[in-house]
Length: 424
Image (tube, rainbow, N blue to C red):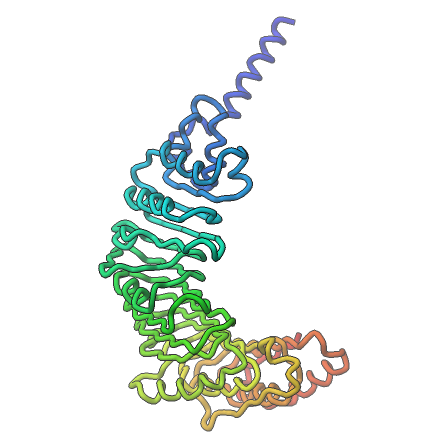
């Protein structure tokens, strides 16, 4: 009997030791594990044992979010919560400082949080402010614009960028500016000019951001995401001078004036444009004719979502994309229900990409319309190295119509003997 009791005690003792193996890890590994949690969740681990009591205060990641979970104590407001965390966390160097909250007070105290993060050599700063029109937008302190260790900067919503005359962000590689405001156009230009090694930029613009021009002149930029909200904006100019840009994602819901000064290294472009996209044609023609190089010399993959009147843009894009390999076409939703059909005119001369490089074509939302059939027929006939055309029909088409459509497609001549037609 005594032996069985002793065995049970030994088993329980071994189980306790094995179940607490995490506590036996070195602090650096525990800090890494806790860095994937919000700061509130990391703080909760302090109740596990004496070993865990102050571990969270050395985690180099602060993720502070004003959610119901952060307000488990009704007497503890978010401002007090953040102040409490910054006092107890003694980390000299922060890998990340994330702050997402609803602004319910004057934003001046938030600037002290900015300064605290910058003073700790923060590498990634992610600030998202949601407030009301009755409260002023948060203007980051000038110290932010000379943060020597900052690699990633993300600002969204209730933030206004008032950029000083001196900007020096020597390590910044990723910049996200999402639905924020700017003091003026010059603030945008000064900010970009001080980002010496910037490689990725996400720019989401809205009607009330106080700008009329977005001048993206960044010699080191490789990836660009640009989105314009479709509400209430007057004409806006988008200028891009990015000689090493590889990927461009553009959503244009406005009457934009384009100035693509240099995108000669572009490899991939994903473009969503509004139903007024015919205005793009004169601009692209002017640019492609004015430059000593083809506008999209290195472009190998293109996805185009267009609406009424804009399919003629496709012909021009094919003409200036000499090395295009993959083409994805889709009909924009705003092309539906307008009471008239879109139109398309083939290029005057067979584009170089059809003769030597285009191998894959995907057409989404095919509706058996005249211009769509003409477009597919032209590509099938003239694409010499085409391997596959994948057509997905509109779900509204009845079965009989789909069968008739397939018969039409199979009758089209093909310039490439290796081309396969896939119809879904």
